[in-house]
Image 1: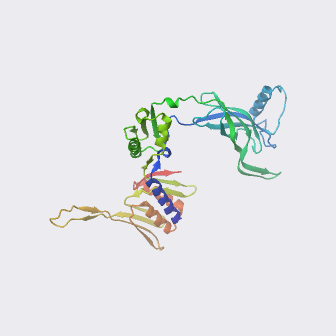
Image 2: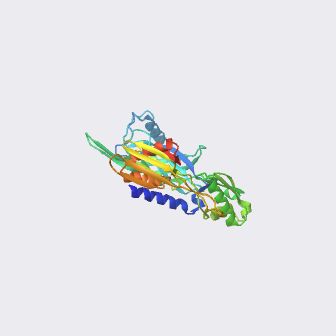
Image 3: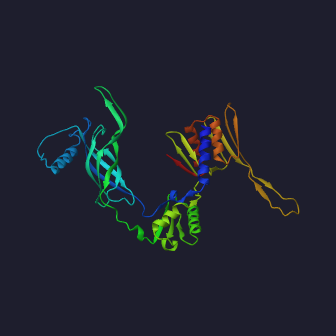
Length: 363
């Protein structure tokens, strides 16, 4: 546990201490996907489809489909078990062109037991504006499996949902005159004033002129005309590869279900003492003031001096130096064999006391 935690800390420090490409730090304004949704019918199931009595909309969809194909079933009573009503979702990527193919996700909306082996019948996919942008059809690859007998049933994964790789063909393009842009905005994935300012300086230094202007913590505007290049696409291509060292807030993320704790290298704690069960944690600050020699040109210096101690009744004591570093405190807790869930409770208490100088995120 202690080696894993220290490895995560070293990895986090290394990741944020190295330059990152701008394309991995920002989203380009206008360059985004669009969500599509539709509902249709899956056929060819091996008796695992919807029960018509519990899902009457399945019968309605099937009747409408058959009527469009020339089969009149009005007033007829049919209850097949090899069909299921489904929602079909997909994302239309930016700059998708007519005739291109995209992946789709199929999810049952009735009481079907499994979509394994089923085939999605031609289903239109609509955008937020109600227009049809793609049409999906194909064999479903289910995400699980189920088996049952007369007195028992076992299910692994989620057999009522699946995907169709390249299962939809793009029929309509999203109208967007990208080549006509005169200004472009870079939207930071994680808003930060320092990172935005570094992106501004890096872009201007690369072009040799004032091209980028930081507008706020999450936006950097780029003047396409001032860049002196043929098109916005060429400007983005050049900006994407520029390296910038990002800055992030100190953050501690814990997952109570799995007992996982991940923290950044900049996380610090101040003077605090915590008692949990028979465990005692104490962090103290004892700064040392160093005076210069008489009649010298030196200056008074305050040398930080910290100590942390973690102990339990009758089980020994673990000393951690430089206790303002939370990583060392957690390492000491690990050395005493403190359970991850108990460690999370301790971190919560430190944060509630105002001694944890980091954003505390609990999942």
